[in-house]
Length: 299
Image (cartoon, rainbow, N blue to C red):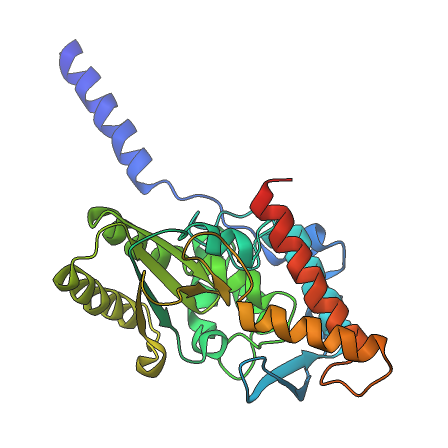
């Protein structure tokens, strides 16, 4: 009889563990962590201003800039809620202490580089995915709904909101884990910088590279994105291999034609001639050159 009572007690304990649910975090706790009142949370005006900036590669990039109050609240969400949450190690874009140099460095000196791009990355990261992410980390339904409404717009992440880059990394842990896991089985290295996916191979075996491209496209689609077929590239050692705009054949460097152009621009500016860049634009490029040199040398 004693043994039976012990068994029953154990079964009750197991059952209680199985039905136990972690207490969900309420809106009150959300307001407390953000340092504002619940009323302020609910009353924040949600509006954006559309603007366009030119891409270095040509064309325009659409930005949605939140109003000042919303931007201020998004920054609170970023620094007080999102900053310490875990992203996948293969994610290098928008991560503290990481840069395009760190991303490129992972692929230096490899035989083959497979590059892929995600179409409309931020808008394609849907409000439903963001909402479910906040639910998965413990927020109650109302709080998750509120967080999603404060950080998404027109059904997705607005490119231009301070929270969008960090959220895009957090919600795509599964995407990164799946591609990184597959790459590891092929002896390859994977990294993602925003919408730029790079996989590098130490051995040039064309069937494996083609198979990898097909597999990664499937993973991308399973995770709700569209791969940009026009931007898929397979680069071998006899070609110029570029990752996030930097050459990686032997070491990380800014492409030679850009360095030559910058020297010419600087000469024209210094001699009072018309140039294709302003002094401020040139300074920005020189800062990139200095960053590449510093990180490459490990200083």
